[in-house]
Image (cartoon, rainbow, N blue to C red; front, side):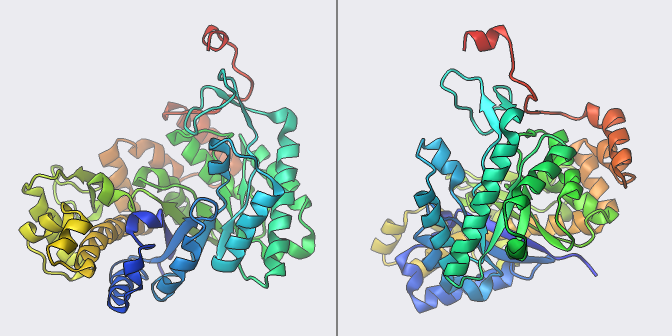
Length: 429
């Protein structure tokens, strides 16, 4: 029996799901029917929605009406946004987020303390900037224990609301040992009688890095999670197939026995705004096909609209002509309504674009997870076959250390420094 995954689409504003017009019964039914037709319980995937409990708190209530077509409503904590905006992360701020999560969501991401420091002049560092960050091992335990205290407060708030919302904890670390230590410190701050309330775990990248090698390491370090199986693993920010490859491979080899997997993405919810259409790698017939990649669509009419519309009609059971669809994609909603059009029509066309992207992506994920041959064919196309083919033989920690020394060292890597960098560049930053 094929493993079933949970695809979590974030950025509900990009889907216009918060629009008042979605309250219209016909429009609401159309949205629910299209989700069920294209993505929910399709391609061995269930479909869920994610909103930000800090920056999108009003979406929690608005998303309830779509429950007939989704598995879960996830609510992010907004911790990253609080940091990047320079706002104080106070108990009062966190409590408001917990109340929102507990009222409207099934899963609430915990507030994790980030165990890194920056060498930049203003003390800040972009999320993807690994060169100016280093792991703060001196305070590592303090960060982990504070995260555990946050999780305890979150659970107690949920319980006070009689909420069934489950917190997902985020583990941080720079290696297998530190990920395990983080989890142990965190859980030590949560009373054992509350451990059963923890819904799952995500592996953070802040102290490890963001390169392809770090993706593989993080996926393997799941085996260091100090939780008894079965447990739920959530993979953060999967916008491309290459980012999820290690998780699909370890699902095939048996390392993830007893682990349910979900993953979230904003890439596909933004696909319409960015004009990017994703074609399935599984349908690729020759090297010149678009399969496994996104194609940019311009506002000017071109032959790509014919190809895209054929794909949308096939997935969504619609009957658009390329010319009709081009108009719907490139006219403002206000102007379309002024010309006598109906909101449900433009909503259907735009939602079809996004959900077909999701459908094609989950089709590829399912095929790569359930077929070693298909997995290696994709890796061959992307130039990483040797690295991943050898990972199929990794069964133990010793196997992984051997793989890392002999194969992994040839992979692109963007690690976070284990100590504070010291260079002329930093002195004059």
